[in-house]
Image (cartoon, rainbow, N blue to C red; front, top):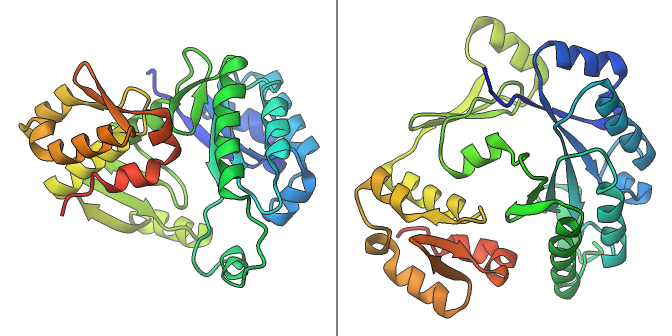
Amino acid sequence: ENAEITMEMNPCDMTEAYLKNALEQGVNRISVGVQTNRDELLVKIGRRHTAAEAEKAVNRAFKLGFRNISIDLMCELPGQTVDDFEKTLKYAVHLPVTHMSVYSLILEEGTRFSQMASRGILARPSENDSWAMYQAMCRILPHYGFERYEISSFARTGFQSAHNRKYWKLEDYLGLGPSACSRIGHERWENISNLRLYEAWLAADEPVEEKISLSPKEEMEEFAFLGLRMKEGINGREFYQRYEKEIMEVYGSVVKKLVKEKMIFLNNGNIQMTYKGAALGNYVFEQFLLD
């Protein structure tokens, strides 16, 4: 009855009819890929919309009745400066949105950007600029009422993403549509990405491309490094309830090492990342992979 039902949308698809149909089907939260307010950067990353179209789409959704709107933004894009990113943040906070997720560009193997990077012709921000961008979002977004509750997720009070928190707490969630991921019990699966194949398989069988059963070790690892993504960190009591082991029994040496490096700290039985640790999250997460 109180399920959060989020639909991902591209700005150029968000016509009045499209949005009304989503509302009628029970969608009560939307996530929109805005990415940046610089048109030249949108072209570089292959987006079909302009910044003006994204703004109109978000405003149209609000006007039609959506009151829980999330947007995705990107940093560390080719040619993006710290000033560009700060302007994008200040543009975004004045949209009628309740939640923002900020992602850095990941160079996937085999993509055009990955090939350009290997040839040394991709203009990526320096490490100093990347750090400055991270600091900017942690400074600017809270100033406008968006509190950070996860490494790169910010929400107004009462609008933390329910499904995101389920990912990070290893709870059940259901994903529908091409490429969507789900987790029920100890199983996790991903739907096939091709729309036509998805439709054909859906008519005959489950449209699942890959299904895996997580071992206790894999679950423990995921509970640890996904829990660290959240501001409150790994809950020691929940860890014990799940695995019947104290977290320090499993990760004691890792915790001591990262505390010494000022990456994490202990707080009433929880293990939380410091500001420095959150900025270097991938390094911290790797330490919680068991041999």
